[in-house]
Image (tube, rainbow, N blue to C red; front, side, top):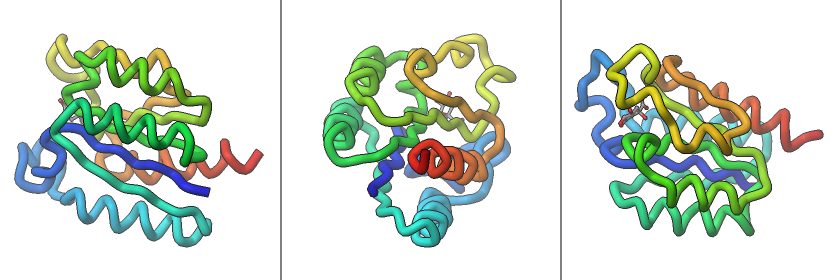
Length: 144
Ligand code: DQA
């Protein structure tokens, strides 16, 4: 089984970018901890980041036929992208939305997520650990 962990714009700057909000861990650190969890579960991990909406749509379409589950932090596209929502809606496997920060505690324009209407679960405000929680939940959902 394969799980896709997809990351949207500016998440390549994690660690340097507004560390008070997003933490000091880099995206490579997050990838390493995701890989450790997936290895232990004998699940294959596809871990990707792009600053382009189209790349994320293409990868979700790939996941549609290749993955057993998707973890996605769409970053700013969370609040704007119907294309990402539509791509996820075309997928039948579990989808978990992750945000490092608690978007509900922040500016009003971050309170609405287009993706949440498709997500099976939403994790916000747990920092990098949110990705681990999402994977553990996906393991649970794909084992039954
Ligand atoms: C984010 C929250 C978004 O509002 C923001 O645009 C991001 C990151 C988070 O992980 O907290 O880039 O998705």
